[in-house]
Each structure stands twice: as C-alpha cells, then as structure tokens.
Image 1 (cartoon, rainbow, N blue to C red):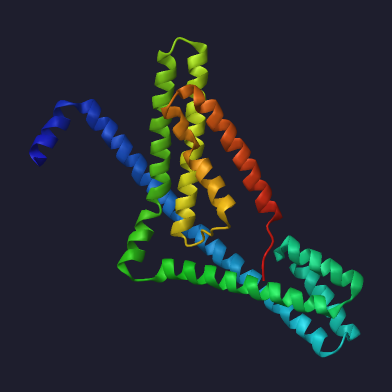
Image 2 (cartoon, one colour):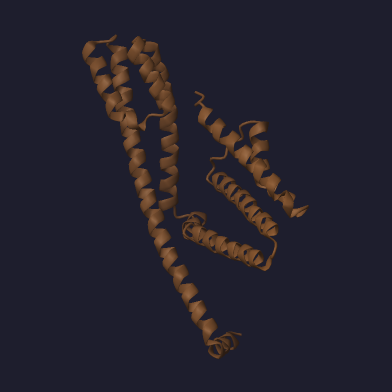
Length: 261
C-alpha cells in the first residue's frame, strides 16, 4: 500500500508538490497557533492575577472603612484603591462606587464586597482551568492541548473550501438574481455555522448557561434558520432577516444583563 502511494506521487509530481506545500503550511500554522495559544494563556493568567490582587486590595480597604466607622484616612485610602483598580471593575460595580461617592452610605460597600466575592470566584475558576490545561498530565488534557492549535486550522480550511465552492457555483450561474440568492445562502449558512461553533466551544469550556426559554429559542433560531434554504434558496433572505433580528435582540439582552448575587 505504501509503495503504491509512493509510486503514485512519483508519477504525479504536481500532486506531490501540492501535498508538500499543504503539509508545510499546516505544520507552520500549527506551530504559530501553538505559540499564540501558549502566549495567550500566559497573558490571561497574568491579567487574572492582576485582577485578583486589585480586588484583594479593594476588599481590604473596604474592610478597613467598615471597621473604623468612616475614618477619614481609611476612606481616603479606599478612594485611592478605587481609582487604582477602576479599570478592572464592571459597569455595575462602577455604578455602586459612584453611589458611594455621592451618598457615603457604608451599606453600599457591603454590596460591593458581594460583587467582589462573585468576581473572585469567577477569576479563581478561570485560573484553575488554565492551570489544569497547561500542567495536567491526564491523557484527555494532553490530547486537548494537541488539538487546540488544530482547531483554527480546520476552521480556515473549511471556510476556504466552502467559500471556493460557493464562488464556483456563482460563476456558473448566469442570472444576477440567482447569484444574489446564492450569496445570501452563503452568508446565512456561514452565520449559522459560526454561531453553532461558538455555542459548542462555550459548552466545551463549561461556560454555557441557559437563561430561560426565550434565550434558548433565540439561539436555536440563529442556528437552524438557514434550514429554510432546503425548501427554496430564495428563502435565504428570510433566514438572514431572522438572524439579524435575533442577533440584535441577543446583543441588546447581553448589554442589559446584570450580575445576580
């Protein structure tokens, strides 16, 4: 079998050249993505560590104010810590801090402490997850480390071949309207596949949360609306409209979402 394969490549040097180029590109991309992923993990860990240290300093400053009953020096120190660490705070925490600035109500500090507690748990979970992926000796973790650089490569090749396929189909079509519908098919199918890939990725990472029936319905609509093209490819316009409306609703709901303590 191996000898037959070698003979085939000898008889077809152009295939051999293309295979060599493709393999070289894959190896190069694998190395590049591997370095990028490792660098990204290091940067994430450093960022998480900075956030945790900042939250700890703010937490200690709040505890000092609560213990000393609004002592001027303790309050000034808390103001300094709020200013130093403000870039790490969520918008909800900033609103609470502004409320404390204007009202000087220490009960607000207790709420801020609750927010910090929730954020610290999230950061600790993220830190442990990255550490376990990088240092775990389990077979599943080792396979996952090897697979991670391959994932973007697979996505690139799939996108390339799918795009090339749609381009060829568009070139064959003589009608401008058919080309338009074909383009709409390509866009709506691409959006559906990308959203599905994102959901799967988030689910694998253990960060997929079900936020009610409406949220689930919207996400399923985003994924499955391209199936309309199986009935008639002219319905790709309807599919695109559904995806745009659903995308706008999801984006709006994400902006309004608050942290529940």
